[in-house]
Length: 161
Length: 343
Image (tube, rainbow over the protein chains, first blue to last red):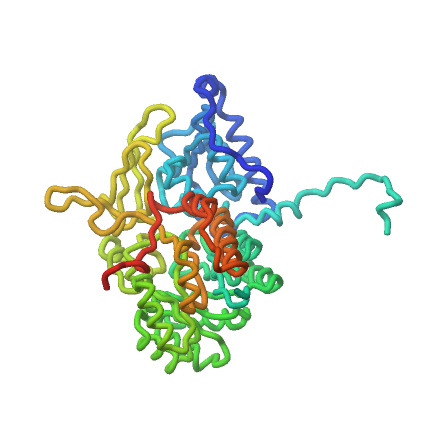
């Protein structure tokens, strides 16, 4: 999956976070919940895991971009939280490189956690549910489920056998 | 050395993607469990539902990889039927072996499914050839997974005195290694791998952080059911939240009173392990992600194949050690009990 390309550990310069913190945060939540809802629709997320997330609040914070997304899962949908109150049930915090390494399955979240590059706060069991749910997504199924791009209407004679 | 004389590489699968990662990176067998307390990695959200299980078995068998089903917890009072149903289900799925710990369940499996291959789980805690031969005689067990308490010489002694295949751990997080007999998790939470299928279950775990300087991880405290397990300084590597890996104050001194978080890594003694006749090498970590399974399986496969190609000139490559060190728990990897000078 990661052959030929790997995401290095990096940290964005401090000014990025200083600017990022001042920007509106809701687009992050909208983007993330849209992606998660697509995964729900494709039935990639196990029912029992989703049931455990019902009514819980989540924060995903990216330290070095200054961005954070707050959302909840309710009634079958992930929904952005525009004015999150109090501390969330679960928070994942890390630099962008760590999130990218986890998202591409280049690094194991436990490894990053042991190395203190990924922070998990709040309901530990819920954290495990989310981590294991994301691990269980079969990316090969995701590729099969995405709409196929139309084939080019060109028949190359030498490729026809 | 002929590749067929190598021990099997047995890799963990906590999810379908992890199973595929193991199969695709050179595992000879994968081990897995149901999404319930019939196996000792009953973690929230982990393991296989019936569909994923069927898909996994099909995928592994399609690529010539064996599937071993772990049903290695102990049936709880009044619920024996659940464990028996798990055994029946595994047989129906067509797994290559069932890994069991409980003698009652071994007896059930032997009588109900006499053709089914059975392995004795590490949770069965059989450390002597007498115990293993008993399981062979009474239940037809064909392989035993040894607890990580024996020296290499002791492992060899077991192998020489039993017809049962011997499987040993080759890589993964170490605990106090008193598998099947450990009471530490029960002491702190009332629950243990033997009873609920999880050591130090996550619902009892609390990670508390104190605010840090920007870009720094900050100080972190780990509590298990309220008991302070450890306090990690800014940037200090963390470990799993189990009692055995905690730092405690003993007579005025604070240190790892039971053991330091470490990982087992047998790369250095791989030639000896093969020489004494170990039949399979197991990788710990069904709770870990597909990324871990990929990295560890790939590395051990490369090492085993290097041995098969030229056992005389085998040496441990720094890249293998680096790959394994990266995914290790704690600061160090050890040979565990294998090279202990005392007995």
